[in-house]
Image 1 (cartoon, rainbow, N blue to C red):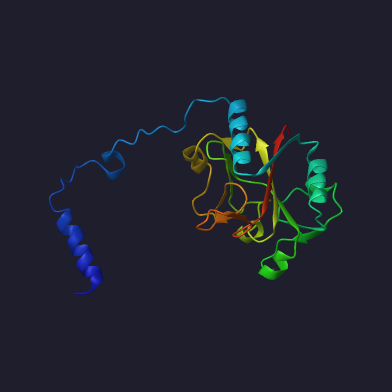
Image 2: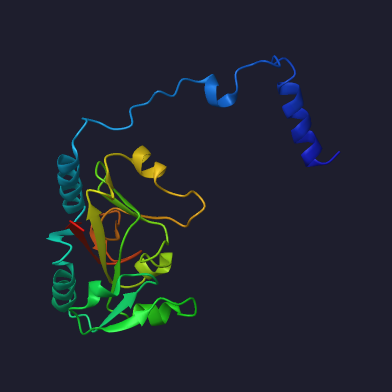
Length: 215
């Protein structure tokens, strides 16, 4: 008898006294959990997101869709970026106001090549207000996971209020489980036993989030 047979045998013995008409697993336990706290409206939810993003030391900016290219151009210039990583599917109009060299997100790029890029600009899949978290899932305009983990400066665009939800459960409902997900709460940071904070260890040292309203 191999390990597989032993395990399946134990499962059969454990289920031997379970009635055939027993409640299915998904209905066996009441899971009427709260899906959000406070019942905030859309505007208040966006405000909570901005507050929690800033609390995690992300730099938060606001603008309209028409103002977005100018804001992105300014942020890249202030960072001194001469090159910007461009995920596949990113709206080209977003970068119309910058002269930074566009570096396409391609599978062949090495970590060293990505490390030489000054900045990366992406969109996101969803943003969670209660935790100050933005989530990327590799869809158009978001790039591969490494594109937001290697460059030192990440600028993420969030459409408000459309892409903002109050809680993690609401955020999960918008995500496809099979897609690669990156959950980001502030710039990458860690601390040693003395609690000395160091940023930029596991990802970008600087995270800038642009909350864009309007079409």
